[in-house]
Image 1 (cartoon, rainbow over the protein chains, first blue to last red):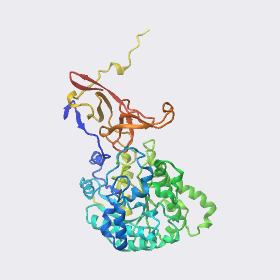
Image 2 (image 1 turned 90 degrees about the vertical axis):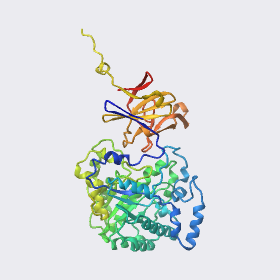
Image 3 (image 1 turned 135 degrees about the vertical axis):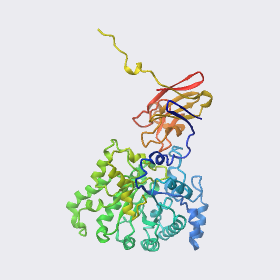
Image 4 (image 1 turned 90 degrees about the horizontal axis):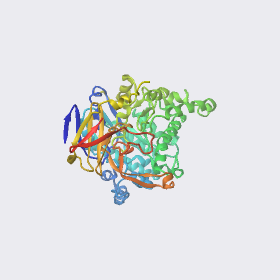
Amino acid sequence: MATENQNVTVQRVEPSFNPVQDEDLDQYGRELQDCTIVDVDVHVDDTLMFMFDYMDGHYRKRMETVLQADFKGEPGNSLRNMIAHIAWLGSSYDKPPRAKLATKEDLLARMEKGIIDYSILFPSELLPIGYLPEPKWAAALATAYNQYMVDAYQNLDGVKIAIVVAPQHPQRAAEEIDLHAGHPDVVSVCIPDVGVNPPIGDEKYWPMFEAAARHDLPISFHGIEALIHDNYPLRVAHFHTLMQVNSMGFPFTSMLQIMSVVCAGIPVRFPNLKFAILEAGLTWMPFIMYRLDAAYLRYRTEMPALEKKPSDYIRDWYIGTHELEALPRRGDLVRLIDLYQGHDTTMWASDWPHLERDLIAGLMRYDMDDTLRRKILGENALRFFGLAPRK
Amino acid sequence: MTTAQPPARQTRQRRKITVAATDDLPPGARVEVQTGRAVIAVFNVDGEYYALFGRCPHQSAPLSRGRLQGTVICNAETCWETEWAFDGEILVCPGHGMEYHVKSGEAIGYDLKLRTYEVVVEEGQVILLL
């Protein structure tokens, strides 16, 4: 049923049992058609069943066992559900419904709209591997994931891949970087930073940073919520609800890892390394920059390798907008970006198709000039990932 | 002494938009009405019609596509115990799950209320009054 009178459209609609996807792109498509858009945080279905064929020997046997497990009434291949979400089972009732996992076909359909120039694929199920207590098992999962992703998602228009490494096994992490860095569709190495102990700047991890620097492969830190915070830097035992863990987990981890990397002098030791933080929002950036600057006055001698104050390093870090905070006034986002000097480092990220993904309207609602909007929507990401403009 | 004039808004001729024949909008059905730049979601909930502003103020997701269900409340009336309430009356935004009471437009847990519109039935037609 659709009737027209007096420029009125009436459209019969049905309730959506999955979170609405992509209608924001349709809404803004015409307005943004000349604008380069890079979605720097996109997730496809990477549940463990896809890794099975990429595992050998006793790890393959182990994966068989894992795939038989059953958590949350879903196939037992969700590492996230197994170790991240089980404690809060059903806490949101069915509000909103769980986002479906995006298949390759879903991704291609989204790209075929021609609005998004590049999608950067990040791990989803593999994000908790930083927490796994067995370094070799974590590294085996990362190896299987990387080969699966390269095989399944290479040579697709506008689709680029961030490989993942298990930071608790830095040598294997370096080998993964060496193996994949030369691939034209591999544009970053994702370090799943939650649960990593000691903090990521520790000298133990330097082989990993050294490998990334050797290949000029940018590093992206991507956090995750929930139970894995039973380790550094948060202990979830303090909190009773998933919301609290989710809200603090991403930014706290990000702040602590930035602090750790900068104070360890890694930007001095590996000056060509580029870093990005994803899925942690933006509002904490001024805090960590200028809080560290204040302390630096007193404690500089603890980190004699630094040649500049901490904020001078941190302002070079790229940052994904997701999960973009809803600031009260339309001019607030530009004020915030001014504070952390992020005009050339802020990159639009949707987290599509996850439940908490940002619609592009979330960014468009803020006032900003066209130059800055273009930088955020795509130009900064082209530079960070070393991509050629497509428009 | 002059006679007080009624507020202008009461003198304005209200615009009537025919949404659907009542038979085409049975209980459980909903429509999205677009007039100019305004989007309005109209619901039939158990035979009663409700119309709300159709875009979620958070990130503009279409509220007409939200599911109607209940939610949990905890207040003095429940003696601060958590209870399931408003079953079938809570509109859940299909974007990120903000909840609105479909009858009043009030957002659950926010100091925010969506604009609501009057809906009447005339000669078997569901009419939206703007």
